[in-house]
Structures are given as structure tokens and as C-alpha cells.
Length: 242
Image (cartoon, rainbow, N blue to C red; front, side, top):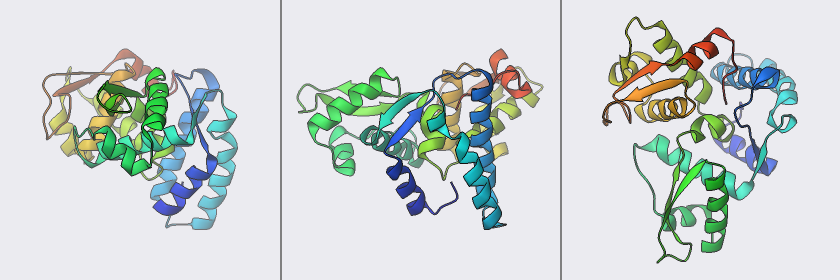
């Protein structure tokens, strides 16, 4: 995960498949969480000692996702997910139409329909119907859980796990019953789009709770609080779901 953006994209495209772990428990879940966090942290130090970090990558990849039980996502579906993730990181609440997505990823109506249908069954995207379109779709939107489940694999340049853990730790250290999201965004200095994806993913995983009306300065939830399962993750009693 220490290549340039173009090198990283080539590396992930060459893999051909993406393994998606469901709510993994036990030692394997903890190993995965540690791998993801270490890679995120190491990426920030890439300029310090490239040779050492290359060796860290080589050793950690022994524990990478393909060695763990999970579900395979073919390359076309991985491309769709990456496209939707990057669109959500670019701006809040922008849902590109199906024609725009097909053009961006070179999909035919049949390919779009079939691949999105499988991603819907995996609860990674929502498919909005449009019977007047050859694909039968108006658009595809990310499921709230997608950022946590596949973000760290598809977006090697984005500190997905680190963002989520920072948010959880902030809520865990709060003396208040809940925290206003706008204040958290300012304190953690996380772009609001990434903050929103992390918050939605953690809410979907029942690690935090969100409420109140959304806004452009804080995202979907006006306020957040840590839930019991989130406290267990912070203590190390349960693995973080990646």
C-alpha cells in the first residue's frame, strides 16, 4: 500500500478479485484489523525508510485478505465499488446516474445490471430502479456498511481504518452522552466526506449511534455516541470489522 496512486491501482487491478470479509470474529478478525491499521500507519511514514516499509509490506501480505475466509468480488464489481467510494469522498450526497457510471467504467447495460444486482445481494450497494433504462436502473448508491467492509482494500491511499478508530476513540473519551458531529470534524480535522462515510459505516456496524438532521458541515448525523459494542472494540475485547 505504499505505491503511488497509479501503482496502487495497477496492483489492485492485477489481483483480479477482492475478498470481502463479513463480520469476522476471533483471531483472524483481529489479525485483519491489525494488518489494515499497520498498513495505514506505515503509509504515513513511507518517506522515512522505504526499504524497511517494503519489507513490512512483504511480511504483512502473508496475512492479507486472500488467506482469510470471505467472499470474492470479481474485478468489474470492485471497479463499481471503487468508483462509488471515490465519488462519495469527493462530495457529500452525490449520486451519479447509471449512464455516468457506465461511461466511467466502460460497462454495457447488461454488465451494469448483473454486477450491481450481485452487489445489492451482498448489501454493498443499493440499486434504484428505472424500467425505462436498458439496465433497469437509475443509479447505484453505496450501502452504509461498504466503506468499512471494502474501503481499506479498494482505497489504499485513504486511511479508512485510522479514521474510524480515531472517531471511536474520540467518542470513547467524551464525558458527554453524545457529541455533535460538527465539533468532531473540527477536532479530528478529517474531511467531512470521509468523516460521513466513517460515521455511516460505524452506525451500520452498530459500533456507534447517530441521530439528528444532516448538514453540509457534518454529514448525515447531527450527533454521535459510542455504543457498547464500540467500547468492546476499543478495549480489544472484539476485533474491529474491516
